[in-house]
Length: 253
Picture 1 (cartoon, rainbow, N blue to C red):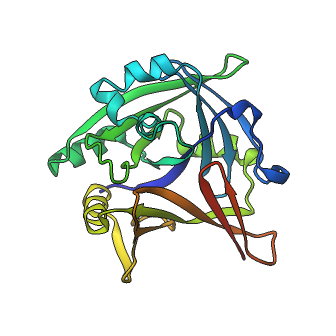
Picture 2: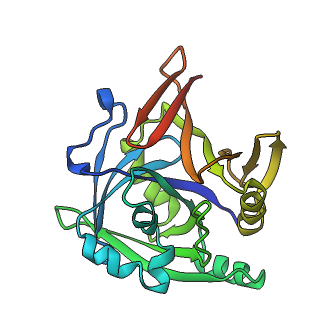
C-alpha cells in the first residue's frame, strides 16, 4: 500500500453558523459549499491534520444523494444514518496518487467507488478541488475512512495552509468503539495496510506505516468515532473538552 497519512477528520455540527469552540480554542476558517451533497464546512488547521466541521444546508439534496452507490458510502452519509446526531463521523487519509491507489486496492479484491471529482466554493467565489475514493463497504460498525487527493501538489498546498495552522496542536490518537472489535481491526489492517502496534483486553492500537497518528479500537456497546487525543504545546496539564457529541482530550507536551 502506498504512502497514506491522516488528512482530516469530520465532525458534524448542527447549526454550524453559530458554532465556536469555547475560548476560540481552535480558529475556524471558512471552507465552502459542496453543492452536489448539500453540505458546507468550516475548517480548523492543526499541526499534522485538520478538523472539518460539517453541516447540512440542503437536506433534500443529501437524502437523494445517499440513495446512489456513491452516496451510500460518501462522507456525509453517516450523518443521515445516525439520525443527525452530532459527533465525529469519519476520517480522510491523504494519498499522492489516487488512481494508483485504486489499482492497488482492486488488485487485492477490495471494491472501491471513485475517484470522484469534488470541489467547494467560498463566498468570494474561490474554488478548491480534490478527488475522493471510497471503499465500497458501508460498514455500519465503524464507517471506513475514505481517501483524498488534493488537486494542488502537496508542497504548494502546505505553503498555503502554513499561516492558518495552529502548530501547538498535534493529533496523537483517534479513539474508536466497535461492537465487533476483531472484525473492525481485521478490516482496517487489510484495507489500509495498517500495523498492529499493541493490544490489550479492551483495545487494539493500529497505525498507518508512514504516519504517527495511532488508532485505538475499543470494545464498545455502540460503534463509532468517540474521541481524539491531541498534544497541546502551550499547556502544562491535561484537560478535556466535550462538545457536540465528541470528546477532545488534550495532553501536555
